[in-house]
Amino acid sequence: MAQSAPAPTLAPAAEPGAPIPVRAVLPWAVFVGTLMLIALYFVGAEQGATAVFSGEAVHEWVHDGRHLLGFPCH
Image (tube, rainbow, N blue to C red):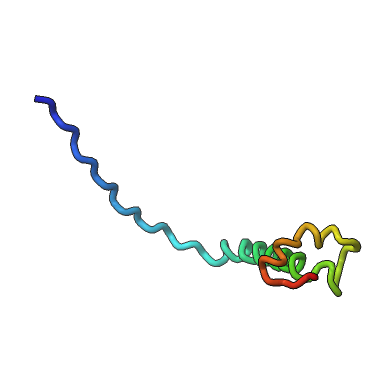
């Protein structure tokens, strides 16, 4: 008679690691928050009354994202 393979067993649940200190996360949170604010400015306000760049180039690059997020542009 052929022997059957043993049934697979589930690995035990992983132990949670040490907590991450706020001092380690804070610089990354500020960096990501700043990037998000810059992206929000370019999608929502650039080429409007507070335009930093002249012309329509930025408007054309973010046009679909502007409509997706509900910002009117025309």
